[in-house]
Image (cartoon, rainbow over the protein chains, first blue to last red):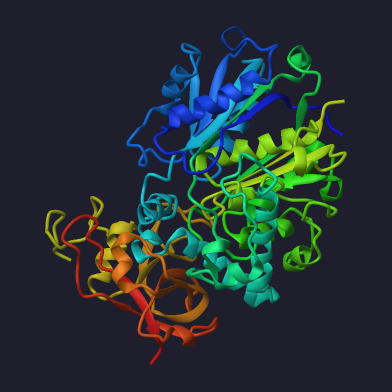
Length: 390
Length: 147
């Protein structure tokens, strides 16, 4: 396997869910404190050289220019702070920016994270803010919501491959099963296939329980150059592969609505850099903003053949205890999807898994993990591969 | 073509009077009940929406072409939970229509029973007659069953 690009020496995550009265800066500080508390060898004011943070929208809190704000709230001014925006992949892009900073030799220790505060805004308000990541004159203008975009992908997948609403429902059921085991998850309750199928329609064939909730939360990683990682921990997790690709902002211009080209390209880059293939992955966090997206991810990541994603969930392969558990955190569906926090929250879960700290949801002996995060209608795709430090 | 650049209802033009291949002009054509795309002067690729560079040959000269507005539904969904301004219409159908000329257009599908929606449905374009008072003053196109 390849030599590491960078190492993760600590990870922190706030409780996800409805966090009444807390602002993004406070949620971010909660995640940063969690990361710092777990890394006693780190002196943040002395060691951390830069902050990279992902957040999608300024509209929720009427607050822009958040990078210095978050930095201030964790007491780390005057180091440089960078904010990235790539819709639901905002903090994965922050993480890649951190990788560049570390690989270039510019900074040896950086803080990377993401945050969003959504639940104080009404569901229709959130729908509108999220829709800003779609094409205004050709999607928003015609009443196409984000669930609508993924609904169109689902209809195409059903038509092309015979994927069923029941198979999509099973993704939600699995991720809720996992969420029960994660004390930081937004939802910690099991649901049934029947409950998913009879939940109220949002964008047919997607129903309420096919959709991730709106959530508040933040996540955070301390990343270092691989050479100095052991100053801070005996159990670093190395990033050994990283890929990113972009596609059209809107869905309509694509050749195929049943596959995310960005994921396929980013995965190809990440697997190549890491020197591993899909069969080497022990645990993965996937972008299940809507259940169909996890089924498509199985296919685009090479976990199964194109069109066979529905069968993979039927066979239980991706359930805890299966051969390749996915979304052990509960995924976006049950852990929650505070948009900007999601990318680094996925990395947090893989860090916990590969350092054997995932508690009741631990995948025994997990050594190699993967995260897949998409922004918008898969206009941004980021895939990263992690290996337990030897 | 005697319209000047300052005429209220005119198109946005370059200094030679050529109607620029931009989104605003696409919607101004919709106001004239015309569904327009652009053709690259160099490689003749037909593109929609209009844009500054040809995606195929990187050419940057275009001429406007009018589409017949007929095509086939290639995917769709039924929106039950819409953004605020569309709430009165819900549930409504949106989809992607592949025109006979090639381009794929997203849009609302109206005057078709929701239970009759299926991939392959033949559709044709139509236009709303109202133009919004505030920005963006874009009359919407939509699709309905082919007569």
